[in-house]
Image (tube, rainbow, N blue to C red; front, top):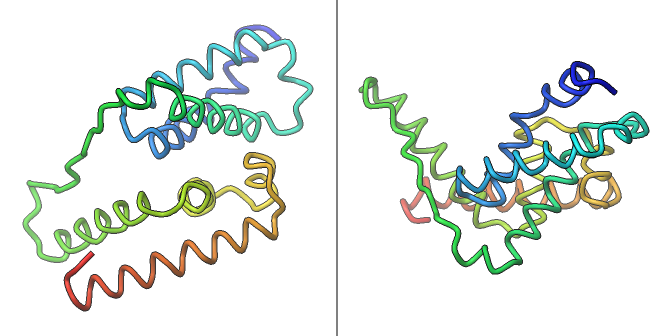
Length: 169
């Protein structure tokens, strides 16, 4: 596989790799490092890439494993938490502010989910992966993915409704 073929194969899902890494590692810097490390590993093994039926799913699985390894390692204690400010200061419309606040609340609530549920939500609802692909990435049966997704959505829905009704998280 030459450089052009390699780039055509792996670049289309670069942003998905980064978003998954950021979801797991929280820090943008750590997510960038993870993305760079993944692409370095893919480049080193470019001759083997053609053997994979779904290169994107393989890359996402590698990303997940790398990030989980980072979280388990001593480096995890040194991770810098970066809190993004999603408020759009140029827009003062009440509806936009409410939408942004709701999105922030949901992101915070997603981060409070158990790791598997958080990853399933990320892959299914944010990245739009099919159940079979998520199953390959997470080494789980599609039925277990559906159950995990259902539980995660239910938890988020209940917490969000409670927060909206009572103003508490």
